[in-house]
Length: 259
Image (cartoon, rainbow, N blue to C red; front, side):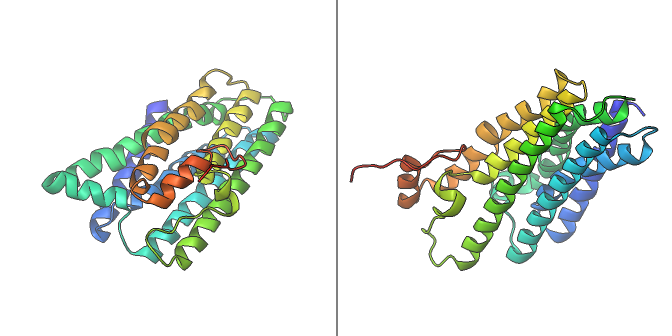
C-alpha cells in the first residue's frame, strides 16, 4: 500500500468524525478522533505485517496505549460536560454560517493531515522489513514514554478532580503536578512523542523520525496548545500570579515573588 493510501484512510475516518459532529452538534468530537488516527494506522500495519519483532511490537504497544487513553479521556470529558469545547464554540460564533464548511476543512481534514505527517515515521518503521531487535534506543524510548504517559495521565486526572470540585470561576489548579508546571499534561505528551522518536531512531529511521516530535512540539508550544489555553485564562488575576511563579511546561519548583 502506498503512503498516500494511509493518508486517504485517515481522511476517510476524519470525514466520519465530521458526520458524527453534525448529528450531535458538537465539533469537540474531533479531539476524540486525534488519538484514534494513530491507533488505526498502527494496528492496520501491525496486523498486515509480514514480519514482526519485539522492537516493532513495543512501538505499536506505545501508540495503542497512548492513543486509546487520550481518546477515552477526552470522550469521557465530552460526555460529562455535554457542551462543546470552548475552542470549537468560539469557532462556531466566529465562522457563523460557514462553520460547517470550515469545520470539515480545519477541525477534521486538516487535523487528519497533521496526524498523517506526525505518524509518517511510525508508518515507515512498521511498513518495511527490519531485522533490528530491541536495543538501547528502544529501551530508552520505552522508559521515557512510560514517564511521559504517567505524567500526562496523572495531570489529566488531577484536572478532572479539580473541575469536578471547582466552586468558583476564578479558581485555578496550582497543586499536585500543576504546582510545578502550568501544563504538565502537555509536558507528558511531549515526552511521549520524543520517546517515539527515540524508538524509531533505534529502528533505523533517524532523520525522518524527528518530524513527529518537532511538529507536535510546535503545535503544542506555539499554535493550538499552550497559547490557546493561556489566552482564555489570562483575564483571571489568580492565573496572572500563577504565571509569574510557575514554569510553562517543564516541571520546576515554583518561584518566590515579593508581595
